[in-house]
Amino acid sequence: MTVNISRRTALRRAAFVAAGAAVGSQFLSLPARAAEASPDPEKIRQGIRKAQERNKRVLTGIPSKNGWEMEKIADDRGHIYTRPVPGTPVAGVQVRMAEVETVLVHVVSRFHYEIDALHAGDVVGWRNPGSIRKGLPESNLASGTAVRIRSGSYPPGARGGFYPLEEIVVRDILAECEGVVRWGGDDRRPDESLFYIDVPPGDERLTEVAAKIRGWSHTAGQGSGVLVDPLLPQRRKAAERLAVQQG
Image 1 (cartoon, rainbow, N blue to C red):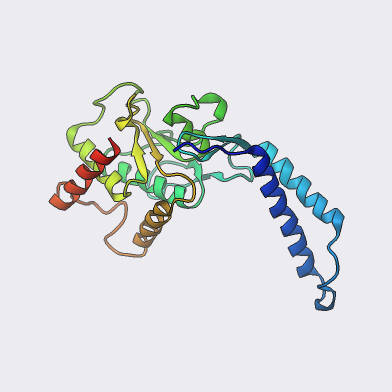
Image 2: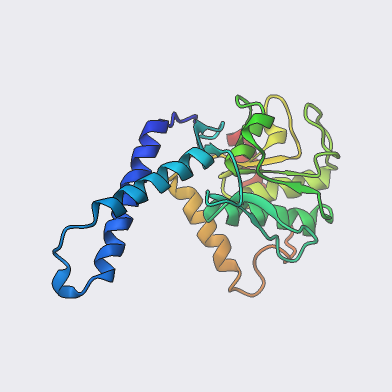
């Protein structure tokens, strides 16, 4: 699943976008009769320089294990920001915005309500690329596409940190996410505190699952915080089927 990202390509793409933005903003600021005038070359150059500086500061050009680009910083004009986990004492978790955020926050929320109550500091998201091992699933933390939940309770390399019923809930959460999230407990070297996006950028399955989760916020009796019975036959079958697929 690993995807190679060309830094030069990323810079060129951002520069192209910046140039387009500069041109577009100039057209919007001019009277209609001047719409055909040539854009100011200096404004285009400034836009390109700003985009290049931003990319140099934020981007690495290196994918994490699941194919998403790792970023050097969070909360500073990149794709990774601190996001709240509503209904929990968790102050916030640094994750990639949009669909990834929606799905991972849902995982954390269900963990809180159905497995064990979380507290401030129990959930960790983004980590600097220099602090993780890039060839392992933990590298997904650096791309903002993974979270660690209560890592002190589930040390890497050890299995059996969850009680049987708790693991059934974990399986149910994964099935609800339709395979776009993987549990580190299923990896060759187990890492039971780790949950990460298991599809590459642009995968439609992630978009669909995120849309489903967002829809629950407008529907009574659905979504995290609403207790479900993971022992229902149809839910167990779905969870067991996914466990085989991801195993």
